[in-house]
Image (cartoon, rainbow, N blue to C red; front, side, top):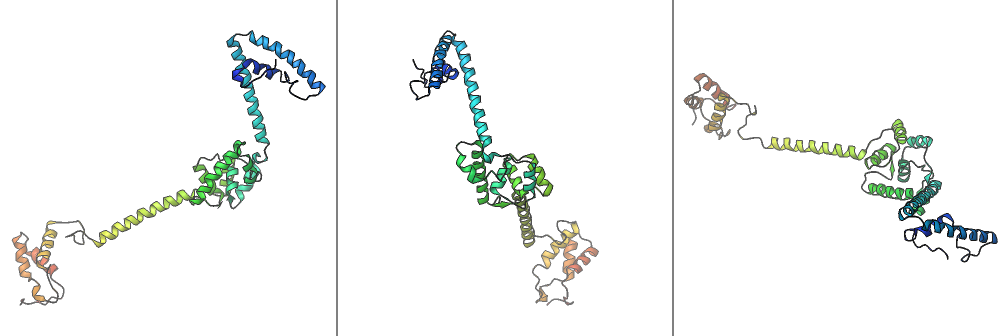
Length: 299
């Protein structure tokens, strides 16, 4: 009877038989040469004998044998896939000479920067080569995603279509791209790695802070605190008396009408009544007297 397997988990014994004797039970379904036919018949016999051995095993013993075979097959599949991936031309790794050359260039394109950040040679990791393999190649998928991130960053002016190597690397590192240390070392050797967007944002924040400070100073100058003299917040008892006298006697003074000016006698008497000595009262009255005011009695 031919061995039919829908899923290995459904028929572990059939899976193990076919895995060990792959030509078993194929003679009836294939147009084959006499040599292959002979091999098929030999595998038929050996597979039937192997099936009986497996059926004699305990459930646990069969399970161990089955899981071991499955693990070996998975590793073989992964190894084959990795070999196929490594063989693709766009997966050629960049070497130190590549890094040195690209570090000296004045600018990188988006595709060059992405390829270098993933340790690939930009000469081989070109989008037209990569695009057809997105569904089957891990690196092709990574490249496509990184390229998408970069192109969206161009739209928001975080980077340009063409970038200084140091600027692109700083941006890529900020987004956790796998930048090779050797590439970073070469770029630093020939230039500067600096995130211009971060520097711009920092400078813009500093300018904004300064502008706010200027606005505050301008507003303060335009609206000085009430009753503040040129000496600011400094104050003594006599300065307070001087300020009160100026407000009482000179606040309504009109330079075009001398009769609105008080006499020194009035000011002195008022200050003396508030406890100021006569000498200080006379000096204060003289200080407050309007410039150019004629002497004599007021009319």
